[in-house]
Each structure stands twice: as C-alpha cells, then as structure tokens.
Length: 107
Image 1 (cartoon, rainbow, N blue to C red):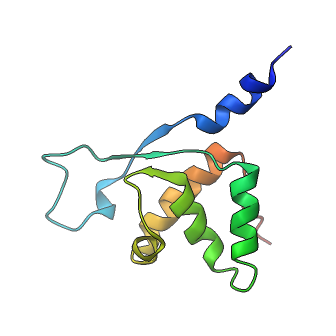
Image 2: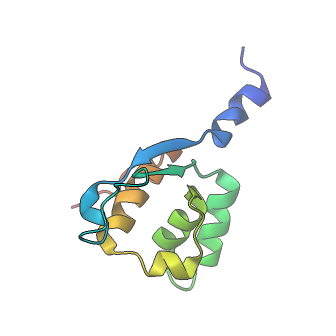
C-alpha cells in the first residue's frame, strides 16, 4: 500500500518540456541556450487559490495556471500577460496535462 508521502510526491515532480522554435522571436533561435522550460503539476491548494483569485475575472485562470506551473524560468503575472497567445496555450496545455486536468470539452 502507498504511503501518504508517496501519494504527495507527485506534486513535487518537475517536468522539462521543449519549446518549439516558432514560439521565439524570429532570428533569435536557440544557438547558445537550451530550448526547454521546467513545469510542475498544480496542487489542489494552488488550483483552489487560482479559482478564488479569478472569481471576478475568469480570463485570469489560464494566466495564473501558467504563472504557478512554470518553474524555470519563473515569471510574474505581468510577464505571462505579455506572452504570445500561442506560447501561452502551449505551456498551459502541458501544465494541465501533468496536473491531470482534462481538456476543455468543446460542443
């Protein structure tokens, strides 16, 4: 049987994902640095705080998920707001996946 510590260990797991080159400024490339970032799954506590914080403005939910789930580089909410939409969606999708959040249903 799993212990409580073993059940909670997954929340500390760091995942490294590769950012496709189309999400960087044209001409910059990744010649001198890796094109990876580190993300972590959201805990229920963090997710509840996000939902409470975004009660008045549901549009903040994806921004706060990225802010809280992105480990390296760490970014502020202002920086997340400045990300290109495609990059934000790419990172958001990966954080949702490692957090076990199902994709939004489309009708």
